[in-house]
Image 1: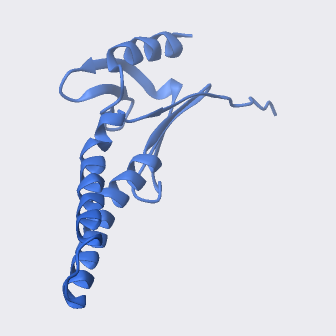
Image 2 (image 1 turned 135 degrees about the horizontal axis):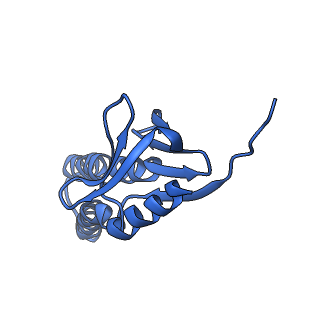
Length: 141
């Protein structure tokens, strides 16, 4: 029995511009809290504003940031593993032998045509044109 050791060649994440709306939401949350901190309001108004700011921060900043951190693509010496979801449980693995073509599309990103399965789409990757070319060269070996 032969054992081929697998090495991670690259870990690819989404573009960091995907976090722009999350950072803007965090800015408005901090602005709202700093705005009410120097003023005297009734306690129910202060508590209500703090709860609303906390919910906005949770929904529009923490969850997108967490999803960004758990969504990535691992390119190894034998396969490509795509992970996603809130806890990185959504997983799809494709070995190099199953990939027929690597195409770059402006609208969809990088499309890997897979034997007997639906295509694997690597969307929102930075420098996707160069990455598609590098994947072609890596898979040709």
